[in-house]
Length: 455
Image (cartoon, rainbow, N blue to C red; front, side, top):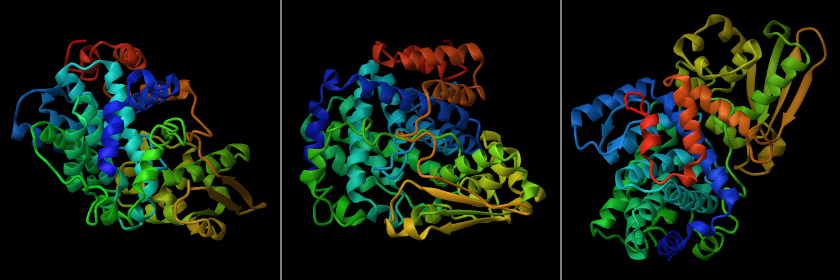
């Protein structure tokens, strides 16, 4: 049975059996996620969640990133997970077809803080959760995604449950129950893309995963076939899977080695990134100005078309899922960053005029290759006076085959963190996270992530 096999993998994996390369990449994922959370702590979503947490009250068990306050473990995971996804700047797994770290880092950080776990234990739990999200994600997609489920939400709930169970040191039986409980808590609809509810999916996935593990720890039970039974997770969310094939590839190789995860250069849907790479390269190479351009055509795959659902965005969040908006900003300003996704910018009349000259189409060749791809895009820029310019990008910068450097990842963290932390604290955070596998506990790190606490 699938759930028990996953539980056996999680319970038996020894930290020393994880290759150094995997630990290094897991550390990079955690750094990237924490940076996104720090930047997301200044959003309206963060304010709304904080108001709910304050009204609920509860024991102060874990640290709210970027706030300086504390809340219950479950409240903290909900808050930290949602704000880490609020800007759509966190990493991506093409196997999962979603965002892995944002559903895993908040649970293991909160449990690690609450129960005094070491950094290496946290990393091991993270690796376990990401294995489930990637390997099971590859098996249930594209069916799951095409049905309208948000993979971050539904697969993230299972990944968070498995990672939490590992960090809580649950045995195989209890971990199997945790996965069964989590299977009934998994939910999240793609229809909510471009709203505050999309990042809420990530927070809720982490919270539900922690709840499932804690309930299993307390003795609650679930069906051993909750993942692959006739009415189980894989049958409901997809067309079913071959459990033996999923279990056979766990750690062989580890998901972080192949196919790896994608680190974002831009705080927008990953489907926009190949086009943005192409537009920015052409703009610099040919010294283009928006006024020079008659039309920009972005020919991509079916999934990208289905993700980018706002040709005329009305809010900054909708702008993250709008090819015309993202391309128009990149073409006009030759950049796209955290400060660009605002209501004022979306409503900028000059920018709106540029947006009207951007078209999103489906490339027939990519359509024939199937629903899931890595958002390869061909950008063709037709000038008012001059020849057409074209550039195809198969893999945007940040993909494992076209990676960001360590220095770029560190600078991205600094850029995110400086929205709430002073330079000295940012540097201390960097040093702590990059040495995570050697930290005896998380006390000093979580204090650094909360400006109101002493470091």
